[in-house]
Image 1: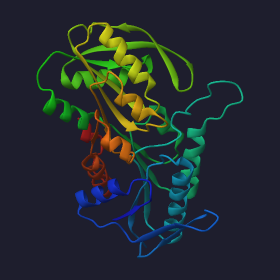
Image 2 (image 1 turned 45 degrees about the vertical axis):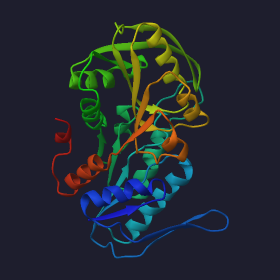
Image 3 (image 1 turned 30 degrees about the vertical axis):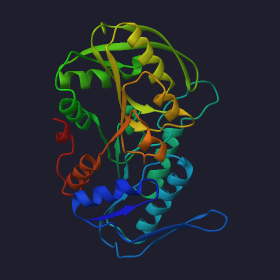
Image 4 (image 1 turned 90 degrees about the vertical axis):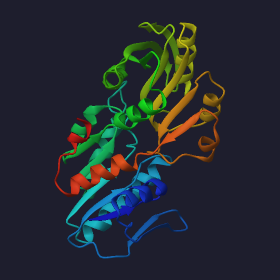
Length: 310
């Protein structure tokens, strides 16, 4: 098989290649003066099983277009099978119509990837599981929970812990992680007045005297986590951690979290960490190259991917 990397998260691509013991294929992705994207594959891919490693993180449109052009280049170069490996699937939050005359952009992106010529999609912790049904090609949605559970057991082996969902929509994800570490479950009841802003209303569950682990798939502005941490501490929690798969962290999110009451925010490297993230006092990055690499290896060998999470 061949591994082809876009520009969105080169360090993760190199780490996945190192895990698999396969060098990244020689490929040039550059831009013309007017910022048009140009791709040139510099080695033979005819008849190969090719995996494109590309998160559609900021700048989302550029990275999405890079991936589409890479898919087209591989298809026209007679690759046997093309798998789009997207550790972070951008536009996933636009998975339904929230008001009249609005798009379902996640479905549009799924159509673009399919029409470009991808044969499979491999992604991590989709914002909404039903997005898998937006694709007309096989789609594997991996879970970051095993990586987080391992980290929690290594760093927090003792103490009374409770897993907290920051909203009602994340209860299934939080319950699954709570079951893995044998912890209780709590829910933050919040009201979102407008995108990017949230107000915590109440805490459902007993958190007094316990360490709280907030669990979610995406942290963007950080407002929800900071508000939730403050509310949990007011209810008697001893300390609050957050385990989030995708650290979007736009705008002043890093500063907001650094100055918050969160003891630690743990994110994965599905999105390449910025320098601000790397030096933040209470943000830590978990590597997912082993998880993604193992899923790629199993896909290539036609082995079970779902058994990774048994």
